[in-house]
Image 1 (cartoon, rainbow, N blue to C red):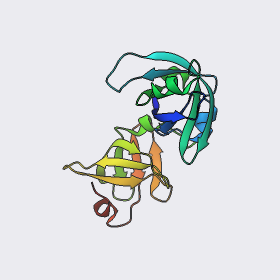
Image 2 (image 1 turned 30 degrees about the horizontal axis):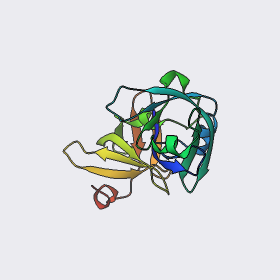
Image 3 (image 1 turned 60 degrees about the vertical axis):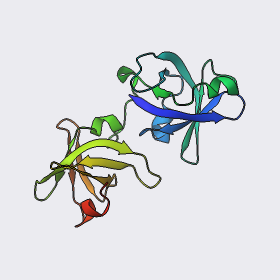
Length: 175
């Protein structure tokens, strides 16, 4: 599971700024002291194991201290790398919480009519609310804000997201 991508060094003591992929401050707090893996790119199998020593948030960015990364130079060498967590090391989530990758490949269904609107292909972080990127059955895609007002139910076991969308939403924010 990818937690985020390192975007730059933070200060002088080896901290890194991470663009989070669905990691919330609440979940991130549970990762302190956990084993994580650093991967140079999504297609690269070369991983480096380390430990998440400390973390904090600033302006929507996740600031992380990793074991064996104690200088600005070592932090700069990690820019572009992904921070990953093994599936078996995921912290337990509370009710109504989920990891982004659990939603990918889920069907998006109109709650009232049962119409299949598409499939979640990605999740984009956004300051107001994460956006589900939904690919339509006939091609094209639209963005669906992940907010309770629109998402009525998420059934992870059947990979189904039931929504109640206002008319025109799928057209006005299409990619």
